[in-house]
Amino acid sequence: MKTHILCLGDSNTHGYCADPNDCADHGIRFSEEERWTCRLQKALGDEYLVTEEGLSGRTTAGMERLILKAKSVDCWGTKQPNILVVAPPPIGAGFHDAVMGDGCVEKSAGVAGQLRIICERQGVHFLDAKDCEFNKVDFFNLTRKGHAQLAELL
Image 1: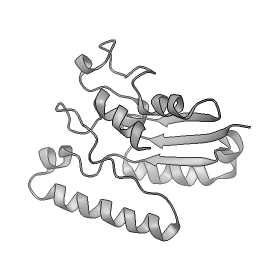
Image 2: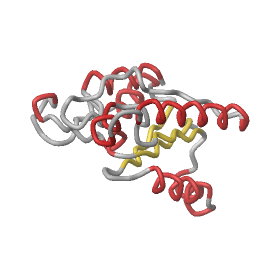
Image 3: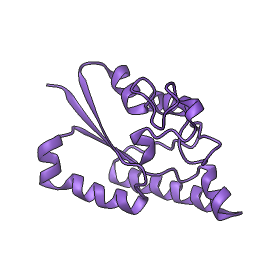
């Protein structure tokens, strides 16, 4: 039986492409060859089944509700993942500094640090994707290169 990996997230998990020139087909969603979830599936091979549950516009609060739903019997009953990857909206990306003003990146970095501590205490792995490449359009979504970097990190 395959190891099931359920990836819950926002537009980055969905594969939204903010810069159509960065997308192979110049569309608004990266192709299956470009998205981190699909690249992860390819890297892991046939012993794994990676399922995308990404939704553009999903917020951190939305992620909390989704995680609670994922813990419910209904979701586990239908997806039955062995591994749950939660990819919340980027906390330290330049988006926050561009939109919110000075000091937000530092505050956001503090949130990432707190999440790391919480994960460690719960025995959950934590990966900070802050070093992955984000686009220069909205400073929030991954570039094609960023998708490849995230898949490699995972």
